Length: 215
Ligand code: PRP
Ligand code: URA
Image (cartoon, rainbow, N blue to C red; front, side, top):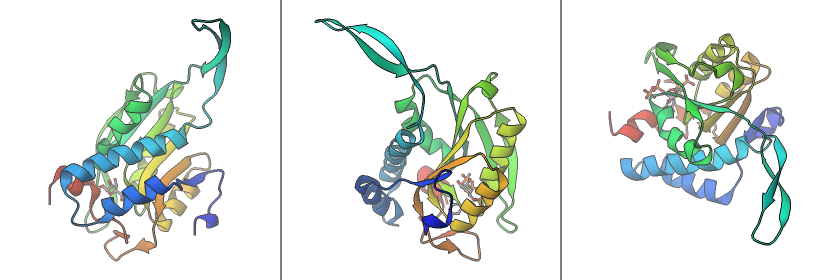
């Protein structure tokens, strides 16, 4: 199913450990603590993949035996942008990989009837336009929330925008890729479709409620 989308811009993380963790995440009997831990672990796998093309530069290192030329990141500055609430669950995983990253926040909730996103908060680091921005949100359903977050970042002058979701519906992937010709999208699973309430099938339910134990 993923081959309907441009492989240069859309990546499904294909790894046995990701598949294994996802099956526990989807299970309705998985409790809040384990759900939260799995979201963090999956964010690490996904972040690793989303930063695969970060540029490197040479650096001289003295080992205990001799001097050698190694590689280090060429000063790539990162900002993590969680879409509240559920996106917060992925932040610690990405920070494990890039501890110096800044974190900006976009607060949005979906109207339960129209499914349109409503923004209630937005705060970015001052130098956001010079950073590679990783938007994180476990769920990509209609794409309304993610396209709005991408738009805020573009309006702030960000050039390199990547979005990381855990479970995506084809409708949302299409909406996001059509909305922004340069965004790169990563997901751990491309699911079947949306139901009449714009929930992802088979999905995992309401990610925010499952992370925070609310209903
Ligand atoms: C969920 C999810 C995404 C959005 C996806 O958040 O975390 O942000 O819905 O749906 P969309 O692609 O149709 O916009 P929700 O609005 O339920 O808020 P929450 O994170 O506070 O639970
Ligand atoms: N938001 C969620 O948390 N889950 C869905 O399936 C759709 C939107």
